[in-house]
Image (cartoon, rainbow, N blue to C red; front, side, top):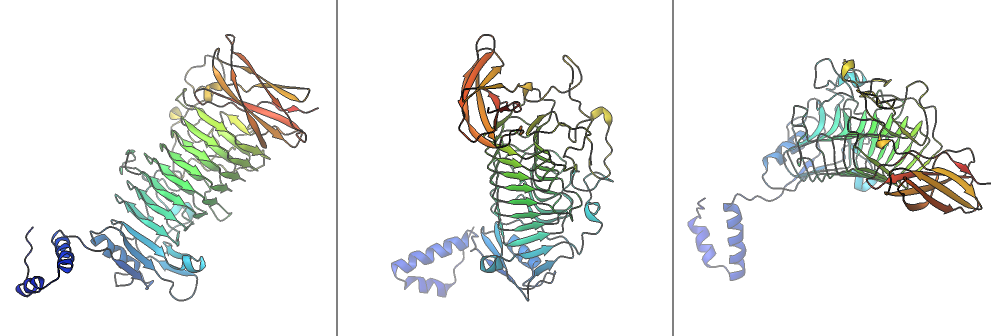
Length: 501
């Protein structure tokens, strides 16, 4: 690249001080390299057009700038509520930009980006799937999103109410983005926020949707609150509320993880969904310190190496359901979770839930049927035609063929007894192996759950596969339950409770 300097400019340079000369030389070098400074674009018009001051104009301006870290400031215009109603889809965000609703820092109010002018139809039927005739939450789709982050890094969204799209925010093959302090609401078709490595044909891509952060948001009345799908990995979802009301036509999952690995979901609350959180074949996800209540199922799980640590699961129909799957070696680890007051009459079954007649209820239940199982009862998605031959079955008899084994290697809970202030747990498992026995207390003598975590004992079995752990019980405990986890991470259901005499 050649840089041409005007003669008058050259003369001025000769008369400069050394320090000024160095600074000017730097500026000229940056100009010659094509470097431009970051820009701030002010949105102070809510009309959806390309004129200066509109959101559409601001996104287009930012996209045209090569410099990272632009900022779009959306100001409060007129009186609350503040809403930009779009007449057509916004252009995808192609630059590293902060899009900020400025009123949130001042008053805690959001500025809405609303798709109801062009998303037409009733409820989930307004949102088509990737395949013809399919619609709604539980079909593969990336159609009719609101804000689209596609093949871009370093975007921040803050102070926005992103509402009435089929997907509120689509993060596709994009990393290192921040979605914080927003309200994500009434996105019925896919999810409030979808983080996906989808290649456009439904196939996952690895290393493309990583290290995104979704923090401190309100997710209200979305089909799925949030999805981590098709290769989304190493993302953090923390301190969000996922809730649904009677206005939601398809309350599916607070979070669905589908072929998503190594994500952390920490400190969130999930309420009023079919499933608070559902994992479908994800691996090594860490799910901790969440609260799940008033869902048909709290956690609904397949996958391998996922760890569920110190969650509060209460007031649901089922606490934790671990489903059978084709991978007989898959393991789910449960540790220090507090589970109480479940077995409620809550039957929401939008690709989850527990609407099978005579479903066994409890704190931790193996082999609960879900969408991919032949005996699932509930919605499989609008317009979806299921081939019965492709549906999975769970084995019910020894040596049965053509079916999935009981999940978690059907690891057996310990047998408990009580004597002289101590609970004894008898483990019958593999010989010469190490196991962790976790003890839980309940305040009600008839409870079969895990209301209070007491502690853990390590047990090593003998050549016959037998081992024993003991726990001294404090006053005020009505009964004790326990489960066992093997050295590879598979956790059992809870044992029948033993009462303190």
